[in-house]
Length: 221
Ligand SMILES: [Zn+2]
Image (cartoon, rainbow, N blue to C red):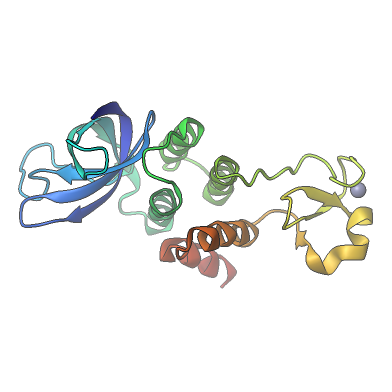
């Protein structure tokens, strides 16, 4: 079995003194795990998390941990490597992709959205808003499509004050009144989307990545 696609190197873990296990989020085939031979020892074209490039992956069996050939084009995170406030968004995005996405299932819209987010991150004035927009795409791709455009009860488009935890749809102040205690408040924050992430993690039997938890804690403090 052989796969090839443009991709983002989202995780790299040393396997032995020479090699590393990599996770690459590819545009065509979603997240793929595989060995990157010589990733630790190589002096030239060193694979680094945050690189965008072209991945070729091959395995003798579909179930086996395959081997990558990785050609990096550039490192999207290089401009913010020293910016702790912004690099934490990168860690969070990569951890969520690795934790929540099933391997080798295509998520083209999320891939494009991730590349956009990373490309704009050095220059944006609103990293939190951009991050929220990215996370809304993530949630949509994973089956939690948030609808913030109109009230799910009466259809009005103004005075939307709440969000239903069950449906992810907005509710206006009047329709929300009888159930206020059971609804999330708008505007949407990373605290609200975290609740949906938590649901997905529970379904998958996995933990919310620490990088995502700290994102919310820091915002509140
Ligand atoms: Zn309403």
